[in-house]
Image (cartoon, rainbow, N blue to C red; front, side, top):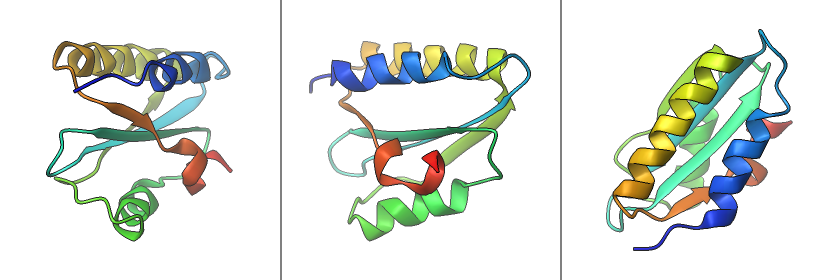
Length: 105
């Protein structure tokens, strides 16, 4: 499988817009059949984990369950970078779905 580098770059750059102390929510799910990682994130929003899971279902993505965390920006960035490293090491395809979801507005 291949990594979509544009998604990785976007993941790292999008964290740069958060100010110190902001809360970031980061959600992801792994495709049930193909090992693709789908993710989205939001800064300073209420919990959107249910809508992220619903987006995947509406989009026809079979997945092994949505995972989300909400943390202060510095800690969230650290966790997100570690997840990206794990996915890169596993050669998973990574797709940024933030633009498709309501996490970004």
